[in-house]
Length: 119
Image (cartoon, rainbow, N blue to C red; front, side, top):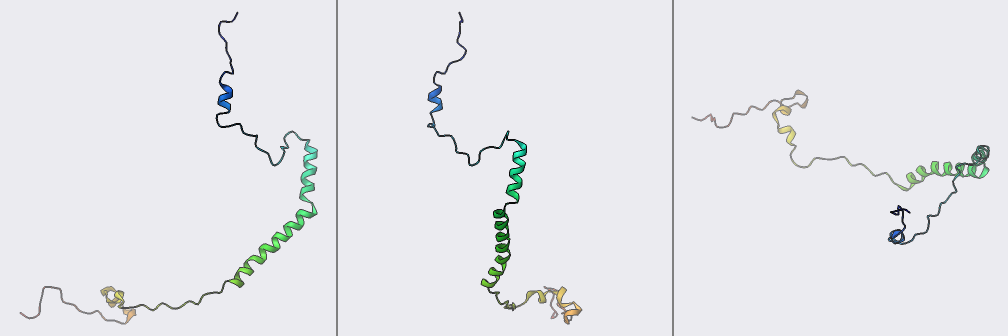
C-alpha cells in the first residue's frame, strides 16, 4: 500500500474558474498544418491566378494613382509672401559686417569706452 498520494485535483477547479470559465477563442482560419502539400500548392496557385483577386488589384492600383491628383485638386497652393524685416537689422550694426567690402560700408571708427578726446 502506498504511503503518500502523488497527484490530486483538489482545489484545481476553483483555480481554473477563478477568472471565470471562458469560451475558447474562435479562430478565423483553420490551420493548414499537416495538409497534403500537393493540395496546398494547387490552392495557392488558384488563389494567385483567380480573376477576382486580379480585378481587385487593378482597381486598387487605379484608385491609388488617382488619389494624389484628387488631393492636389482639393488643396489650393498658398501664395508665398516675401518676408520684410521689421525694425533695425542688428546684423549690420556689428563691426564684422560693417567692415565687409561686399556690403559697401566702411569700418566706422569708434573710440574705446572710458577714453575721452576732451582733456
